[in-house]
Length: 471
Ligand code: FAD
Ligand code: MLT
Ligand code: ZN
Image (cartoon, rainbow, N blue to C red; front, side):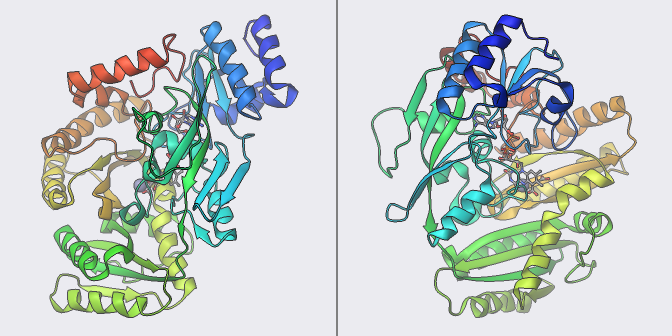
């Protein structure tokens, strides 16, 4: 049963109907725990509007009654941003029923869709008109474009196509007071004042509910070439990245990196995977080129990798010989999230650094973590091509909550201080949510934080949008 005031329940029912409300505990449970099973809360009710008008009606009611709202898409977020707190007072607003693709325009290279459309469905709709939507994440079968926009998600093709911000042209947003901002413009140029679109992208449900978006489509690549590389150290991979960029230009789409302990974890916890080059290398990279022209891609990749082998910057290389082998390579990379869940309690760091600073950071961070705890298990992997590392520390599965909390505080300070010293970011692609809220406060300058607070105050004066997250 809902603990909502009967009058409020009646008004929400009038706004969204029977199909739009989830009231019983069993039905609400999946909306109250995150994918990592790290955060659990309790909601007063789950509201699932079917369209923008219903979302606006819900927000009007919540604004008027000062009812806190947590917007949720696919609930695959890694920072607890979509999980309600434990008060039982927050409404979860799920976008799952807003799942229509409104228009596809191959001449303008745009696709307009609602916020609850799954990323994989957008990719498929683009392909149907011989276009390509390049955002690609391990969670693409369950995350929504609204969640991708709200977290400014990254993934495996940022190196070539940019993150979600760079893939959006226009937005439609229901504001905290229920008004609708109609910003669904399909334009590459629009300098008519402050950029409201970019304000909502990455705002993690704290400024409004994104209900629809116009997305940029790209020409569809018809050829891809993929390789698995083994290297002695991370410096070698940074050198290889620079060489591949010079040799292959825009064709270089993905450059993903993992350390030997990360690979070992995947091999131990994910079924049907095999290390393409064995396990003796200290670092591994998964590299992909793609092109809209069919010819010569594999030889371009092979030529560049041969040079790297000759110069000794990499130790071994396996170029994929078939679609099945390419899939097998990616299965290894995409197994890392599950492997960490199964192997222990991960203290996750989602950091960004200038690529030139990555190797120095990795050495200093490892030395400092080992000085703090000689047995520390560092799981270092990520999107090297974007300067984004998931520099995680893994604790045993049976770690008591207080042990986990103390280790998190200790290791966060070591890693994040080093990131700050290098002018990096402590939140590259997963969002701040509740996981890094206090860390953000610690590292943001007073001026930056003050500006963020003023924006929040002016858009959401009643402080109802995702309280306790981000700021
Ligand atoms: P949710 O988890 O539901 O919500 C995330 C945040 O967005 C919350 O703060 C929520 O309040 C807000 N929100 C959701 N929808 C809206 C909306 N319509 N309007 C306003 N606010 C909204 N992320 C990456 O960046 N790169 C990766 O490579 C990557 N790989 C992943 C692999 C796996 C296996 C998993 C499980 C997750 C991965 N993620 C990755 C994290 C996650 O998938 C992304 O953060 C994704 O963008 C979240 O989308 P979602 O629909 O699940 O959002
Ligand atoms: C990834 O790069 O695989 C994702 O961001 C997910 C994760 O960090 O587990
Ligand atoms: Zn990632």
